[in-house]
Image (cartoon, rainbow, N blue to C red; front, top):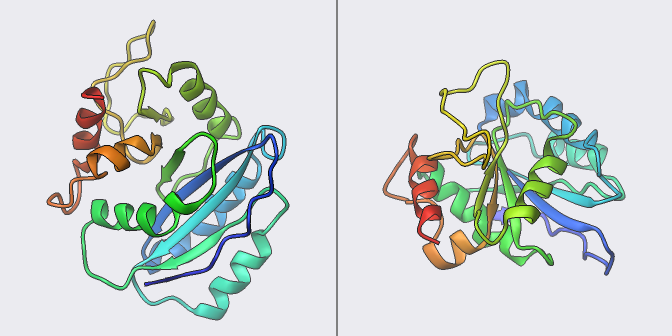
Length: 206
């Protein structure tokens, strides 16, 4: 397992938010540039937070192409990284590996990160909205989910007053590190699908 070291974070008032993006080689080819581009256009980037996208691949990718992609998107407040996962395992175990190998070692005042599907185009207010919702409810909320449009997938009912929901989709969600430090993160016995349901139920216990 290899990953590129991330730049040392200098003391600043900006929050640092890692973004874990787990992608297949096909998703890298089709989606990753649009996904990263949408992250660079976030309201609050450079004013409220900096982003550290961690692109994790578990299939062979062109190393030179990936290095060029990383360099092209590098910015003062945007620091994409690449990590290679060299074992065959499920989605939840891969996300746990990203967190254990890279995310947990990134200096942050607020210990949170975002898990994001690579085929996602993020609304420009998304990260700021997730961040503000977390800060307003961090004593009660370990997971904050982004809404999906034009259709929720799957459709679930949100409480319009508290914004609570029974479980959060892992397509785009902000997680508190505490879920991983205390509960171990995603259940690695679940290979694919429903791992986001399970970790949401874990969150209700904290």
